[in-house]
Image 1 (cartoon, rainbow, N blue to C red):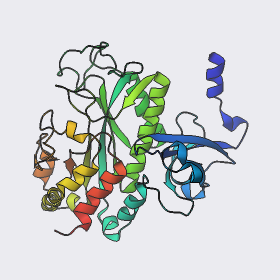
Image 2 (image 1 turned 180 degrees about the vertical axis):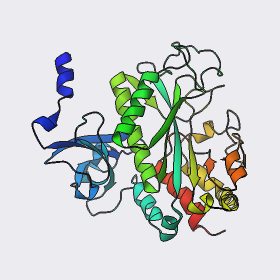
Image 3 (image 1 turned 90 degrees about the horizontal axis):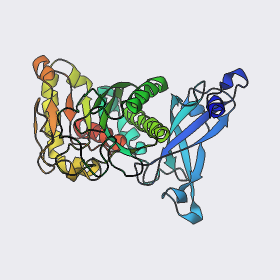
Image 4 (image 1 turned 45 degrees about the vertical axis):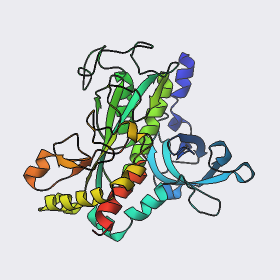
Length: 356
């Protein structure tokens, strides 16, 4: 096994200028990540200089067997923390051979919204709090929980320390460093309220890059849990009962919100979000009704609300934002399994492009 480890960690720069590019795309469920690798003649830093590629869409639920070719377009490049050296991870989106985005390509429409002049002018910033649950591989039960049983009630686990409270920290720290290596703007990690549940934060990121970075951060986490023999779950309510669910709280601001008088802009934006509450909820992740019950730090799914420092509201405004009269707000409705391309672009569309 030591020889295998040596081979995995071979430094290719000593013998060849060729690099390995791992192309990543989103599969047919809209949440499953797929990837495959190819050799390139030398280092690349501009996605526009990467070749397009294809895959068998009939094997991912994205094309029929008699016309199965799907084309992937490179969109963003990250350093590869697994192969290291000059090797790269490439986030792609998917198109038909005729150049039409396939139905699961949510990046295409998001990119159109983020390239709108009014949105570009406002420089939308995002900070996404991605919660997730680590599960035991063979029983699909949270990591560190007794098989078929339960740990002690919630309370000591949030940001907890100790073998009976922080379950899976080696995976979490490995992911943290790997994201920093890759060039993802990961801004922090913490243990969550339910044992075996963790959170990482990506941002501040501008526009479409928020979606690219979160998807690649998810991919890196999937790869690390694969190595560790642990199952990664983005289910918004993995354990029923008196346990917290998993969300993807999305912090958001525009240039107008960050400038003097921004609090009034924030209040108008929140009013617009409230007017489209049902539309946003429909796009904010599958199974979210199991999480947004009005309990466990959530608002009821059918009622829109906002408040300062209120974690039981749909939208929370921080004390600092209220005090400073400018800043950002947090949309607490998105589920952990949301598509960040959909959520970030929809928030921008509702708050910037839609007229009251």
